[in-house]
Amino acid sequence: MKNYVRKTSPRLHDFEYAGPYTYFVTCSTYQKRPYFNEKATVDMVLPVLRYGGEQNSFSIYIYCFMPRHLHLLLGGSDNSKLSQFMKTFKQRSSFTFRKEFGDVLWQRSYYDHVLRKDEALKNVALYILNNPIRAGLASDYKIYPFSGSFVFDTKDL
Image (cartoon, rainbow, N blue to C red):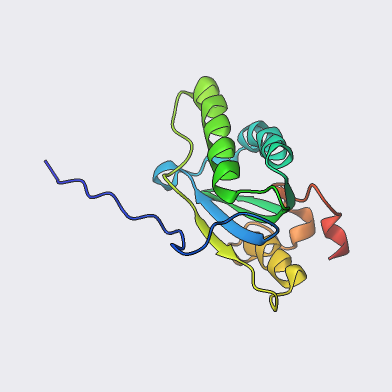
């Protein structure tokens, strides 16, 4: 039997992840399984994502479901806490997914990048939206069915 070594958290140790910051977050599916190839899975997770944003004072600027992971561009407010949002979102979506499909949805933890003031929100949004093009899943982000925004029309970017 292999010894299991738990990886350390990828969070910054000297940053609270609370307040009006913008975050680029990536969550991977359990064992990199391609769950988000299916519209039914994306449709099941989207309302949980919207609800999580509303309950945790986050604007969901961009979401992009790739087959094996989810990219998010989130805008916080004074009352926002990234760890609470991610915990709520992943727990609720995992529960719903397990009830429907009887399997684990998410890999442990997530990766985040706190945008600096000099990083243009539009550039990061376009980077995320163009991910399906780089992966060969679409020829234009405007026709990729598993990405969007709860804040603005992505076709205007």
